[in-house]
Amino acid sequence: MRYISTRGKAPVLTFEQAMLTGLARDGGLYLPETIPTLDHDAIRAMRGASYEDVAFTVMRPFIGDTFTDAEFREIIAKAYEGFGHDVRAPLVQLGSNHYLLELFHGPTLAFKDFAMQMIGQMFQAALKRSGERVTIVGATSGDTGSAAIEAFRGLDAVDVFILFPQGRVSDVQRRQMTTPSEDNVHALAIEGDFDTCQAAVKDMFNDFDFRDGVRLAGVNSINWARVLAQVVYYFTSAVSLGAPDREVSFTVPTGNFGDIFAGYIAKKMGLPIGELVIATNQNDILHRTLETGSYTTDGVKPSISPSMDIQVSSNFERALFYAYGQDGAAVSEQMDELKASGEFKVSQGAYEALKETYASGRVSEEETSAMITRANATMGELLCPHSAVGVKVAMDHLGSTPMVTLATAHPAKFPAAVEAASGHHPELPDRMSDLFEREERMTELPNDIEKIKALIRERINA
Image (cartoon, rainbow, N blue to C red):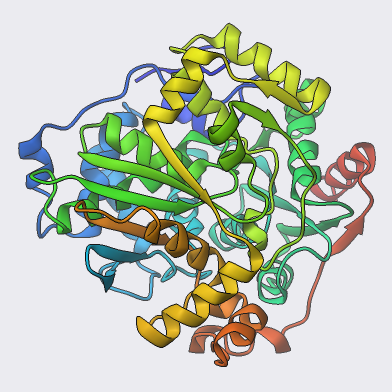
């Protein structure tokens, strides 16, 4: 299996190389040269199988000879042994033809655990074999950072630096990043918003002297292995609702586009998906792009669903790559326009391809709170604000096809917003009950790329 960049100018890599590299050297994102497919018999065979067995079936064709079958099965088993639900990603029925996919039973109570625990185990296996050491740098709007820290904390061959926007994550999210005591974990609070942090990470990857000098690796959803691990729960949930013998639709609350792009990959692999619906909060650039064909940044507005407070959705570049018929030059031109002016216009053909693939909806702050209230009162479900955004948009797209809304985080990660809307204070699981008693460790930094790089160099050489 070979991996190519969305911008067409970077070296072709193996799965292991693409995983450890993260961002391509031409600034693009890696994708498989071809997408393997599963026939209906193979999908039917997933019925009644464990989550781990489905993960092996779905992911194995993409990893080439990076791991043997036995090694890969062990990696999968270790990745999910710390989850708080035996099904890993259980389905709950909300209404007629509407289901909630609970993706918050992992170690940090967010869907990011499904991918990050996998990539942590894969990194560990690959680095142990090679004897190399890497520096992981990631940006987070809240959940990716804690999931990455949980996956890599204490590992000998890895230093982890997570950049998060100061004052723009929930207290629970922040403390999950700042309370681990392991020396290889570094939480950096950056002045600005998530896009500021994400831009800094991309700048570090594009500084090849720095990148090579600290052996930089990325675990944001720019990393293909992250997206691949998220493909699995589309299969498990769809099969439990009758796939491949009936279509299933999905609504995904998303900011950086990685989670819904995983659904697109599942569809390309042969899973009969009806609609793929993008759910956005008031930072609705993805919805506006599908409405107008123009991708125009408009500043990040802080919200009660902070993990979606994003204007530059990195994985949208992968969607554009397919919408432009895998034309790397066209994608590169669009990304250059975005960097120069903060906007670009999608060509008519690519726009039509996007509209055929995705639907979308936008939810205001007031509607988000109202949905939390309604779900608690009429569905018996306490939703986090992000999941509430998804449920509200999904309800506007219900039809004869079963609809699965992805519940991306546990409500206890956003207690203030949930309690204000529902009157109920969501409690953390027992294993996290002392979170607010633990000592915090973090470093506050300005939005200054040179100061960020200097601190990273200093810490890894200490």
